[in-house]
Amino acid sequence: MKDKVPILSLLPEELEGKVGPPSYRGKQIFEWLHDKLATAFSDMTNLPVDLRKNLEETFVVTSLNPLSTEKADDNSIKWLFQTPRGDAVESVLIPAEGRRTLCISTQVGCKFACKFCASGQAGFQRNLEADEIIAEVLSAERLNPLERISHIVVMGMGEPFDNADNLLRALKILNHPSGRQIGKRRITISTVGLPKKILWFAEQNLPVELSVSLHSAIDSVRTSIMPVNKAFPTGELFQACWNYTDKTNRIITFEYILIDGVNTDEPNADALISAMRGRKAKVNLIPYNPIEEYPEKRPSLQTIRAFEAKLTRAGIAVTVRFSKGGSVSGACGQLRLHHIQGKR
Image (tube, rainbow, N blue to C red):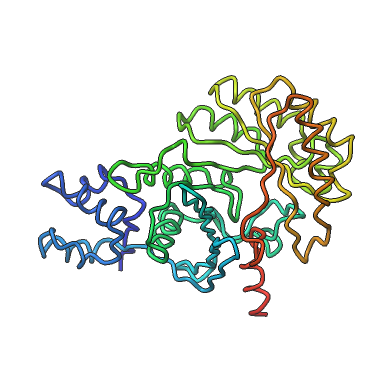
């Protein structure tokens, strides 16, 4: 029997080609799926009965089952979703005044094994397909439907640029005016820093926000917490980043997790200042959210503010971002890791 096509991965014009005339049928179906959040073709009551039957025979609407839900004191919600293949990924809803941000995953697990991140602790399994990435957004809205999701941050499990084709298709669909209509400037992609992919992304004409996980501008320190730095040291990474800003005229945000005794001293601050000075860049300082697998500590508030002040005095655009969801399994991948460990 022929496998059914995951319909969430298709743009309206692609649907038009598959369902046939009249041409507006593709847009109608797309709106049912992405705007009205339909999960069954039988719900699409303005379509002919025969068409609904044909859709049922040809396509499948990807859905994610919430295995676990945790709500933090700040009203952030973290879901562990089961995919149709039976594995699990995390999504986090982060409400704030005037916006509802969803942090989404792009892979089941992660290859890059950053010490401070739980996502890679259980290894890498596979890339998510475009329909599964989209289903994270649609599922989150069905589960918490009071307000529409306004922003997306691709900072969940996995390295987005390691699954670039599926990610870009998903973002184009989520941005489409017939569906979620999430603006490009309201989408942020976060990468561990793959220089060739950053240069490639500069050519894609997709003006979303770009964020790079840096965490130290000193190679020895960065390598100790981010093994990817062995393959792509900071010199190569920064060259790609500055080429990106020259090509796109866009500012890159560098994420910098402050880990006590690891990257919070003056040499680390000086190296960061040297790298950022005079560039189109800003720095997000993020106090470490500890995980069992990397038992380092969050620095004191005094250390955090001193690091911030040093950058500010040097003219670096800097903010301190305290992580949401700290009262639940807040670190990326932590909920999934606990779920896997519980099965063993």
